[in-house]
Image (cartoon, rainbow, N blue to C red; front, side, top):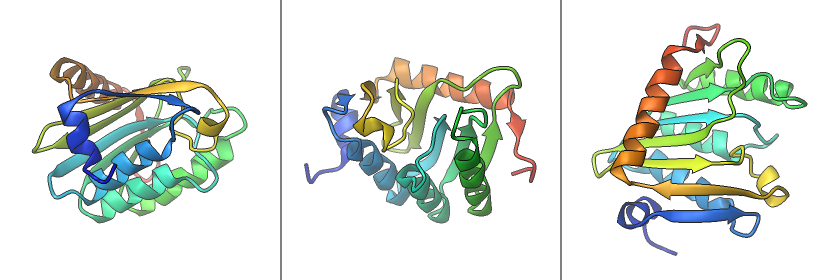
Length: 171
């Protein structure tokens, strides 16, 4: 569709099933949030990041456009540690607050919270917000502006960020 993805989510929940739906819909939401004058902040969790991550590129774009961006990165994602560390450094360099999980616990929650003056949005997924994996593995994502779900996602975001390690640079 040619309209605003965020406005569509505010009108109704959108449920996608990868790989049957395109992961580009999630990227579209992030890119729109990055450029929207109404969006104040984006918080997300990432477990695995693609080598050429469009997710991270959209988050960096958001930071460059004045959004407060916070990303919790799982450093112990088997086989993807080097990629996650490399992307973490690039995000820090772009002004993104990068957090690492609690020692001994893995970040398996796949959650994005977008705070906007027009109404907040949450994306809750079983997948890793990884465009490569989304073409292979079966996962689902719910895009919603439901106030109860968004409030709970905000609570999770705030709670989890208070129990994580800050990145070594202190960002």
